[in-house]
Image 1 (cartoon, rainbow, N blue to C red):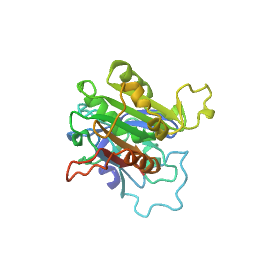
Image 2 (image 1 turned 90 degrees about the vertical axis):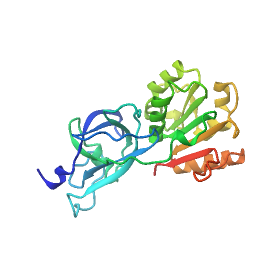
Image 3 (image 1 turned 180 degrees about the vertical axis):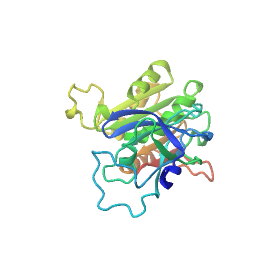
Length: 275
């Protein structure tokens, strides 16, 4: 066993390829307990620089100087905090990146490194129990929300939830079927998927088009809930593309929403930038 292999303390249990550049990966520790976590938090994955890259990624300009050194990155956990056998991650391929091309080369049964510490403050613990919640995401920014919904939605009957998920095309809407099912089963949950390039769809897209900002401005959540969210009733979470987050913060601020301050517990806007 090489030094690099000796560092690998987890195994791939399951893999779903949503598209060639989006995948859902379930990872389990080998001979050590899975850490507990709060939905919305992140864990760290790693692979040595000597690990192979997926064939559709771009080649590195030079050979790694330290092949056994771990390349590590943080990824939000998508699985329920009650799923104690594995962590699930929703990962987007960065063709020029260091780690994701190596993660995309993994198969079920392959080993990788999983950090034993889970971190992050992007959780529903920051929201009073009598406040409604809007979860806005682009691309893999949906991951922490899946953990929140899978953990809390079945038991949280008092407040309303909504997900606005934006992607270029319908096939990039990870967890689409599961979220549709949640919306059908839970009267207090609304799912609003939106695509920005409907002209690329092989079958005409009958849903919302444009950007998540359009969905918010057009008060689509109010149509689903029967009332419009407001700073006095609702907290808004933002995760994904930094441009979307900055735009939404501007829109929300103009409507009286404030950035959440962990020190005081004041504010209704929570955000997590993915890149």
